[in-house]
Amino acid sequence: MSLDNTKLLDFLGEVDKELSRKIVVVAVGGTAMTLVKAKPSTIDVDFTIPVEFYDEFERAKKMVDPGFRVDLFHGGMVFITALPDDYLKKSRPIRTRLKNIQLRALDPVDIIITKIARLDERDEQDIESCIEKFKIKKSQIVKRAKDIGYSGNDEVFKGNLQIMLTKFFR
Image (cartoon, rainbow, N blue to C red; front, side):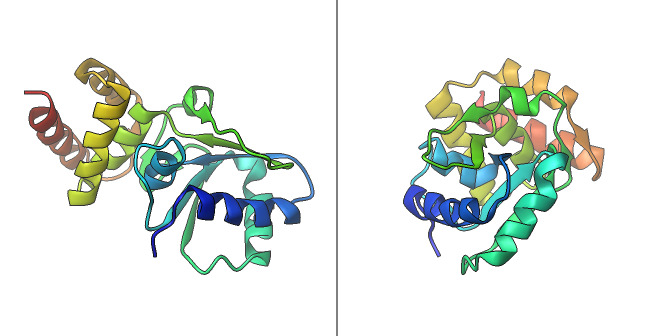
């Protein structure tokens, strides 16, 4: 299923109605790219949610049956990548009419960093789109890569980083 901005915001609107307080939600990966208009749609929905809001979002999400996969990560984690503590400050606000959800999208450099760990064909396309749309420089990626925590094989991450840097910054 392809999810565009409208479908993402409709889903969040339903979740918003079930929330009992204001929370912050940060879109990551393809979800973030769709919300910042770096790609037209995503095939799944991914958020990292500050720890103090995670349970509230999870509770509300369970009350809404979106009909598609929604992955949630705790405070700055994206799969097996731990973003630096400033990820939330660097994230970009997304304008919405939501009452209880402050929606944000991961900074484009952080999107790239989180995609390097897996680095499949779709990730490479997303990385290229971010680099082109947001004029990301090699030095920005290298600097941020040094700040992340990676709970997988560090050599795989470093190898993927070199592959990506070579491919997109000749």
